[in-house]
Length: 300
Image (cartoon, rainbow, N blue to C red; front, side):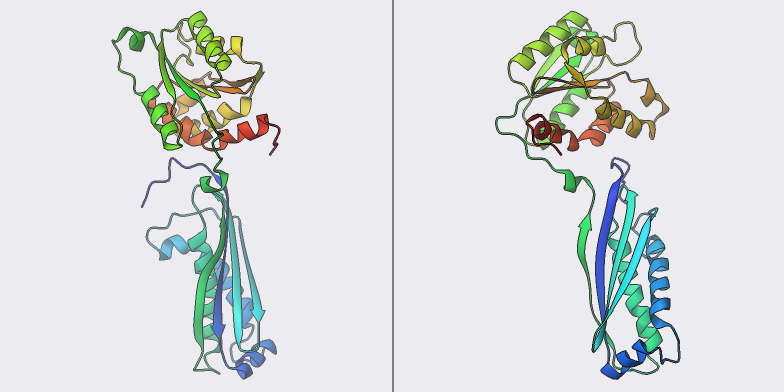
């Protein structure tokens, strides 16, 4: 199975349809419930709900999903029944297979219930008609001329005795979004960090991501430097990052990083560890880019 541990929970929704073609007289008997196996539509609906829940048991590479809702509707026409199934879940991966399975099993159940009176039925179509949720629904357009910067705060990296991994991870992630950031390394000195933050803000840089200096050590001062510079704190950004990290390590709660706004610039303190950086980036990107639309007066 493919790992989905790096994904965030979002509301997932998918709808699929499946169509069963039968003789008009068969459809009429279905309408009047004049069948050897009674209540075909009721049984098909229950079968669809059960099938959605068991999709991971039937299809090997599907993940078990905590399904929140399954709805099944039937459109009974002259010579066919169209099943529409919709599945919803708040989870890390989509529910397309669950809704396709639900629609398929509903159609198969109707076939089973109707086959004593019709030997020529055919399931002619099963297809996905819509899906929602996941990061693809939250892709944001990068503003024209967008400037970003990565700041590594570490005495060891500044002196050359420690190799930087976290800053490079941030740089690569930004580049994957088409953003080419500048790269800076500073010692753990509050005033120097604050001065560079101010300089970058005044120079029109729109996004500054720092790494390091967010812990409890005596030299961890990046948070204090950031507080000197920002005009408004945005708690939710790193609340999301810490909550995501806490599900993976109990130490995430010890990160003191903050995020805030100065003018049209967003400053975000990421942890110093490479794993912490990766997890925080997974949690906040690409949704964080929506902030520029808001800062420009565009709202949500």
